[in-house]
Length: 526
Ligand SMILES: Cc1cc2nc3c(=O)[nH]c(=O)nc-3n(C[C@H](O)[C@H](O)[C@H](O)COP(=O)(O)OP(=O)(O)OC[C@H]3O[C@@H](n4cnc5c(N)ncnc54)[C@H](O)[C@@H]3O)c2cc1C
Image 1 (cartoon, rainbow, N blue to C red):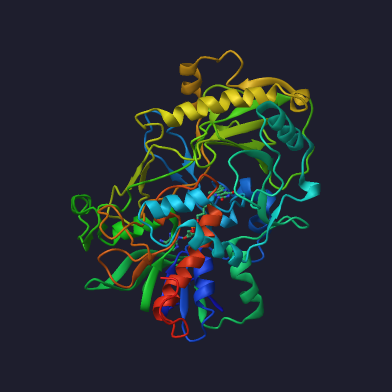
Image 2 (image 1 turned 45 degrees about the vertical axis):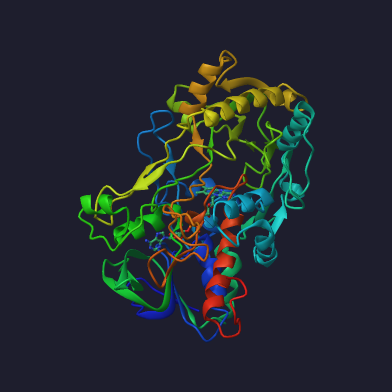
């Protein structure tokens, strides 16, 4: 494997993968297993190799909003919080290099929902083998990282709500339960087992992938076409110079749920009227590009503790809770992260204070019903796209009601021993707020994101007018172009999505090799 330094030039490869993030690292690594093909991986950010600020999981919060974060704002959210910033990592490994690495195998119902939405071949039975293929080290939170107050949270949640204590959430499907999560990390060193660490670092160290070229600090701003066939990617290097990376076989866009639709739109692939209005020549009218913007919104309840919290932790948010309020739901319908810190960024804007020491519960909506939209406001590739999540706009008010239920359940847990023994007072929303309407108002105004945008280039059945790709991840109506990242999700998994992205990267490799590799005749995975 060679690493291009900024300013040097790459010209062509069989496969050009745009985005060295969570899915992109998996895909590029797998494609390069075939020594007979060449792969170029174009990544906007620098390498993560040797960077302890990136590779040490516990330092994740320090990366948000910094030089390795694209930091996307949201549009005005009349029913929610307009101040949310969407972190997206600008570094090899993508968001798996700055996230919290909570690792849930998607529930069977998550995959089956995709198949029902037209993603033929992505049902639970078809996807299960990809879990076994993942190269990341995924283990339960290590014993010495298990903070006493997080243990007491799980104990209190179990007693208050009657849910089981779960040791190993990935052992079998669940609908309810509390416990420490599984994380993609090395507990003895707190080092990340990100997509780059698991799929690229071993080859960088061994030098055994001469056919894989990393083109770092290089930004793809337009796809190149010959008619309707993708032939390459136009890029800007760190020194400002531009060039084209040509693809002899395919271009695969893995730039994530924000930057993949952005790149397609800038290349003239998207809703024709919108593109024309911005002066972007229409290559292919695909109305679904940027639609179906999904996320897991959350709110927050903060307590002051009567003493400082012990310092040991994997990353301060490594335990939580799943609840199923509706027995007809195939999976959990309310989820909590438990933070061993007072997470008051949003409440402070509403006038709340930050206690010197405290804890937070962040209820989120596993299956939110509001749907947003991503769109361009300019043909200039340097202008960030608009992200309109339309938070809390579903007609039945299901999303806001879920968070109100979450605040009420959080209070029941907080009132239960042994957690109750730590807590001095509820800081926000504060015990005075008890009515549905006022709790809803607080929950929405103090809302945050769990940072899970997805769905903006969703796959679907061939006849689905809003599908952007077919179930083989091929962009509809064009040749030589696929998408493989969180943007192809038809719906959002009930659990944190990173493992679904990793598994999608694995499956993408199979789909691509199935169509091209002589040793896989018949495309067994198509
Ligand atoms: C702060 C945070 C915490 C999270 N915590 C968790 C968690 O604990 N568990 C979980 O399951 N999920 C978590 N997530 C979500 C999860 O990390 C993402 O859903 C997942 O990593 C997305 O993968 P992706 O491949 O779609 O995109 P990314 O990983 O974002 O990869 C996209 C890559 O493309 C590059 N890129 C983008 N545009 C271009 C371009 N035009 N040219 C060149 N390169 C480009 C980017 O630099 C990036 O490396 C978290 C996310 C964040 C931000």
